[in-house]
Image 1 (cartoon, rainbow, N blue to C red):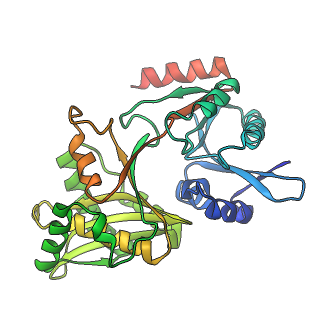
Image 2: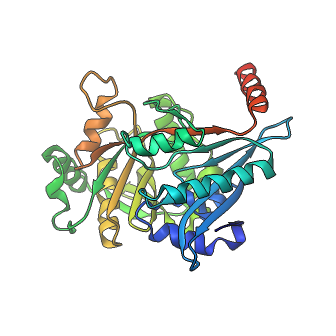
Length: 338
């Protein structure tokens, strides 16, 4: 039995996702409130007694100059990974929603580990194709690093770190760096440092308004961390947290302070917070490629490994074409736009 919910009637869906083993904040109505320029749809799957067995939250992106859209479920659906009957029921409901909204594409990217062949076989049977790119071309990074905090305390957290990481954290503290929680009023400084980080690393940062929407839309589930020396911000990060998980989302630093190790201190403080609030998993988010020395991006792998994090690779981005002719038209339009 399935039902459809909107942003204002998603309390049960949010509670189910929060309590689930595979919880993700992007699969709650909170993310719909952040992505205000997208539509939001929730699907709930219940058993005969009315208990929720699975959920699926979609963002709807309308395609300009057409009567179609894309339905995208970041890190969804949420269900017990052995229960493919629930998965099939959720996808059937997604097809129904796609027909109603005239969507040409249903896109999902759940947290199934790479090599989950039974799941891949099931998605192929239902008509999905899989994109297993190992770079940042997918909507969500396929590769990530996650630290298991189970059994750790504030006193034992550093024992899982590499000695270099421990040294840098204490070096930052000896230099007088402190970390505090910030708010929307701190975003101009955050954006200033993010612009510097983007220039250094060759990416275009998101707008200050986007980060404001992130903090206000997620509410208590989002945190802005500010590293300071003598009251001057020299580094910052934004995190998200829900249920048993916490995610490092965005980070930046002041290029005038390149050797203060402020970002490592922020990572340490965020993980302490995760332990104190009962989270089990700390997700460092994306990396490119596999953790092999031949990988030109291996330095970022080693950095995250230094915090005791383990490498994970998910199955990838799964697409189900629901309007083939329209899908070809949209693809042509996007190609011409590029």
